[in-house]
Image 1 (cartoon, rainbow, N blue to C red):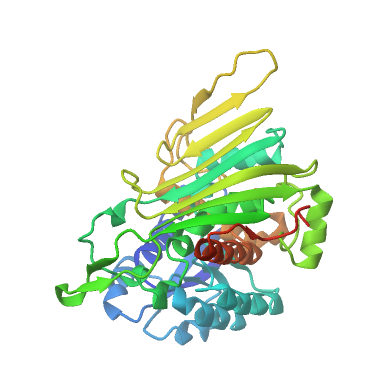
Image 2: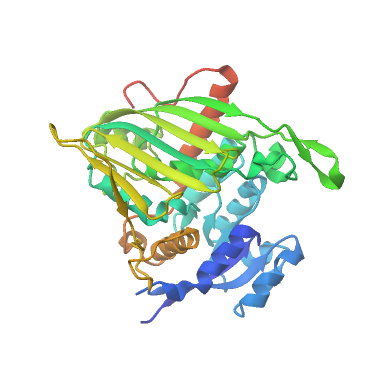
Length: 415
């Protein structure tokens, strides 16, 4: 099969930059792909970070501390950018204006103002594909829930629960890093790091909240800094957001899209399960101090006709409940194999993991870059419009916590 080669540059050669590179190295794991990424340039302000890439990828031609060299290269088609939040605005704007396609890390700007400036450039360059990284919805179990939402299986939705939980910050002796400092991480704290993962599927489903009440926690107030001296931790460790979703009908989404309130961008007719209207609570958890949770993403949707839940804590387990009036109510547990959005060489009897979900996310990005609206499967990476929605929610959460009040995000009628 003739494959289209997409030449990538990586800006930020840390953990997630290596994960992307690993996905490129495993591209042969995917079946029937007519597109292939190739890493030709890497950039990091710390030259020690680029050596691993040069050692493992003979395709690399540009190694630099100045990201402008990647943007000026006619060879590079697209950029993966994984840098601290305070750098998002300048780098993302420069990347898009240079005509390079972009997969950037969340939250797509350190705050709402930075996101707005990025969005202005996105809208000025519609020819450039811009997406945000969020890999967890590409687990097979999460894809099943996305399918159930598209198929409108739930009936009247009773409640949605979604979250992303870490426990690594439970250790009070863990050294401070940029994510504990507002100047680099932003005031969102844990919400900026974890929130887009939690919101990816709910926002794609059209479940933009009408209001939010947030409870934010600063649990460990200082950590060892350089030289061992204690340094203040400025950002939020844990966040719980209690939201109310009120959507009158699919027509309401069209009104919201036109007005700029609530739902942003094109309405995904294949995914949105709001044709008959919905009104339900949605609980969102974003926590860096959740005892026992290593890296747990979960989604639970309860409905009058059908309910389903999936957690990466049990990566091959899907739980569902089909309700029939008069019949016993019983949750069913199904073991999932490797049933991914894009087929792979892995037999369906085996289970998927984190590296597999990243490979699937990158397949979705490259698929959309090559085929745009003719993607081979319907689930896209996070859109810029969805990052804009997330910033509205997270900014409202900061206000809600400060005032100890429910903050309205749109009118009582969902419009």
